[in-house]
Image (cartoon, rainbow, N blue to C red):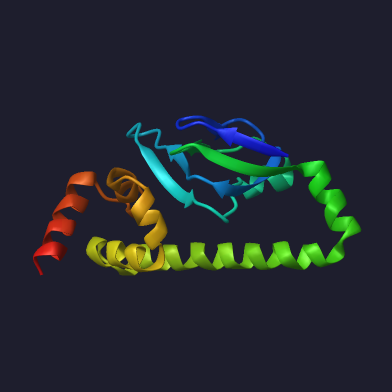
Length: 166
């Protein structure tokens, strides 16, 4: 089924169970949680056109999500419900491989992000983000990119000025 979210609409809220797997046709989403100590939004990932946006654990186990997914701009999604997804995989076994490859790529990107966050400084992480996600960098406000990188918007602004000056 198709679903349209307006800017600011939630696809999923913390505590809700993720009932659909969501393919982004057009638009941009952010997945985030609220840090209970600081009250600040911490970005987990962005999803743009031709990406999937789902809390995989909540969807697969049909249990409440620990984070939120929200539209950054008007976003059109194609959705498949959990039960339909399971039936589809049973009826079309080759799709199981397709989704396994998607998950492998996702896990690989998560592993890479963890390593880079532990090894690179903020400027190097920002440059890596620009190199690997140029379409996201064009669409997403800098304060959200800063949150994704684990730095303040002010620090990102200093990094950007330093890069532009060199």
